Length: 393
Image (cartoon, rainbow, N blue to C red; front, side):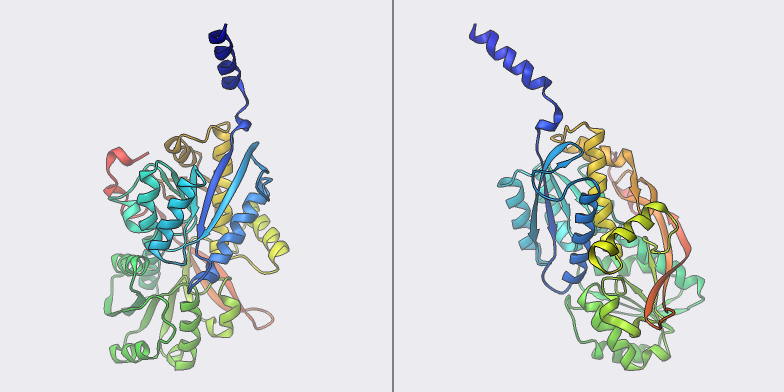
């Protein structure tokens, strides 16, 4: 009799709707420190993406599944990121870790997440090892592979006929990836490389080195507060009048209000074109401005796309979210219904997408505004063939 009752209860549980489960997501971000300004935009986009799927608070349903979100600040530090990821996994029992702004943090966190058999959905950082030798089927990106924007900038500089460039970047994983990506594509002479400390705020000594190297242009990667300081000091140094400036992740709608007129004339590449004539892009920009009172950035677009990609996979799996590998694979197979268009995934979990030329010009009111131009290229990243065959999907 007891055995029959237990079997009946088991059968009832097996037939219960998937919505009886709980989806638990940890969102790891940088909300303090030198790059916190862009972390705020990424979180804004993430929350807006969740709201577009009907989720605004714990207990709300994401695609009919009760969902709880746990937030943490990694402070841009690897040890803090690992500690917070471990807490999310052990104490909060999250099935997905999402977010992660800094490349060095995602590299440290990824091992913790993968060892726990948890999915990792990156909404910004895309370091080169995760595209190649350290790729993993539990990983999927809603953003970009780090080297590719730098490669696109190298291609753009070639196209502009520039023959000599000084490269500048902070001395950490993402900075090294950007320098490597640029050099992979650039066909001219690298007149010098300057790796400054992460969080640098005073670039005057570096500008003196640039003058001594006498290039035709400077390529610089310096996200967040570093970029705000750099562009302002660049304009006041007088170098703007003699050298062309190509930047990466310095001038965005997250930083442009603080940089102001000093950004006019700078040239960039980007995988999100704010002028892209696509209904999802227009709707995203409209709702972001309505919610936050300012234009969105690339970081906001990636957070928005990441939240919606997770929701789409939950629906596709009918709420069966506990198989981490199947979950990440589902996002990859679905592709990314992005504000950037309909994107397909490469076998290493990174999207294949266009990279655009972006310029900062004076708007009708004289204030700086970003303008999307033409596509520099659209291709898979350069490292996917290094992804071991048994780690591809």
